[in-house]
Amino acid sequence: MGPCRYCAYRNIQNNPMVPQPNQARQSWSLLVQSNLQALGIDAQRVVLDWSTTYDRALTPASEQLHVESGHT
Image (cartoon, rainbow, N blue to C red; front, side, top):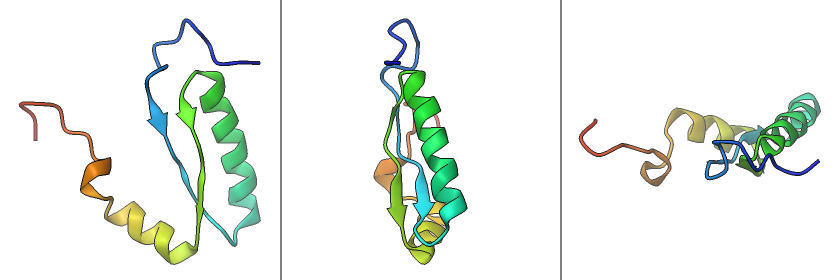
C-alpha cells in the first residue's frame, strides 16, 4: 500500500530516533514508521546508541525545531 495521495500530511517529514540495543523499541519503531508512511508522511527511523538518543531527545538541534514567524 502506497502513501495516501489525498492526505494533508504529504509534505511532513518525521525521523523517529530508536535506541540501537533495544530490540523491542526497534520492532515498535518499524510499525510506527510503516503507519506514518501509510499516511503519506516521510518517515525514516534513525537507529542510534542510547546516550545519543537520550541527548538528542532532551536537547534537539536548533535546525530541527520549527518556529512559525511571529511565534516564539
